[in-house]
Length: 139
Image (tube, rainbow, N blue to C red):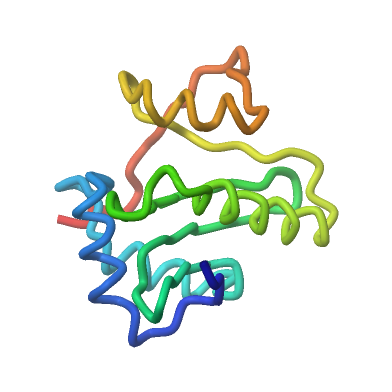
């Protein structure tokens, strides 16, 4: 897999991938999420390609205190080959370059396969509760 920075011409393929992987939700417009990322640290929006086919993504962020991963996705046809691990390693490398001391991510409740994937990479549950408040509705 070749990892590169997202290009605006990738948008349709990225949204299609996210839908294929079950990452989209009615209350989050993926096109708006992409536009928001392009406004902040666009160099940390990663895509993976195999033979020219966009088949993976990772949206990485750093706020000066913690790093975050969103939209880590690997197309089902390419899962189980280490591509998710490779994307996470690149995300961690980019965050460490910026002096990021800790990486956080959120997993939807009940997603045991994804939870197991991250546990294999050394991630563990923190004793925290995540709260959210929608400031700008997408729909």
